[in-house]
Amino acid sequence: MLEVEGLHAHYGRAHILQGVTLSAAQGEVVALLGRNGAGKSTTMKAIMGLVRPTGGRVRFQGQDVTGREPFEIARQGLGYVPEERRIFTELTVMENLDVGRQPPRAGLAPWTPERVFALFPSLGAMRARPGGRMSGGEQQMLTIARTLMGNPRLILLDEPSEGLAPVIVERMAAAILELKREGITVLLSEQNLHFARLVSDRACVLEKGAIRWEGTLAALMEAEEVRAQYLSV
Image (cartoon, rainbow, N blue to C red; front, top):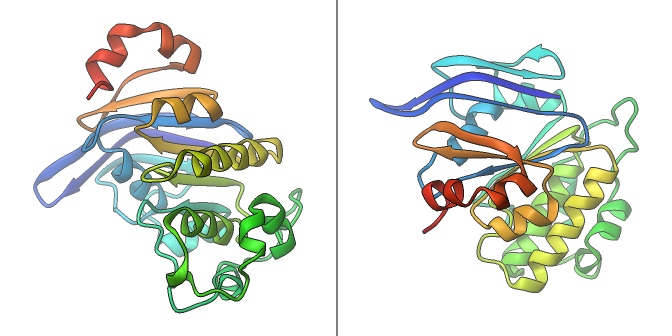
């Protein structure tokens, strides 16, 4: 579903991504782990076209999307949930969902408001509430729900558990597992190793813009030296 090969990216003269290579199969949840500043968010933005790669390739469903405009990549079925959420605070829940609508895709059951409310029941009770009058956890759910209205085949989730109460984190984990059951691929950027363990099949550990380790979550939990070197605070 997703192949990233030798990806490089710069912010001005700063060389942020230094040859990132990773992949994700259909229905797989892959966690991109690393400390603050490791390059996780930049990797996602480069995949989505929000940061223009300066080297390497990004292939989505076998097609080269390197350097294409974000709206073009989104129309192919790649969804992006930014760390900043970026909901429309003046619009209601329903209006935010309408903004994200895209046509159905072959082989996927189309996402409707009723389906996203089944996934996030608390949103269904506040359909007319403006986004600016929602808690951080509710806004995070709305951001994911809005992305799902685009009927994506793959979702980039940037730090979905950050700053959320434990009960909301559990709901978020349950939602990601439900997306996996639907056959949706998820690339998850996280610092919370516990959260990643709940939902992920594999992990890629990022440090200073390069993948330093890759394997299953079970193998990562046994690799104490890897966790100490790249993930401990």
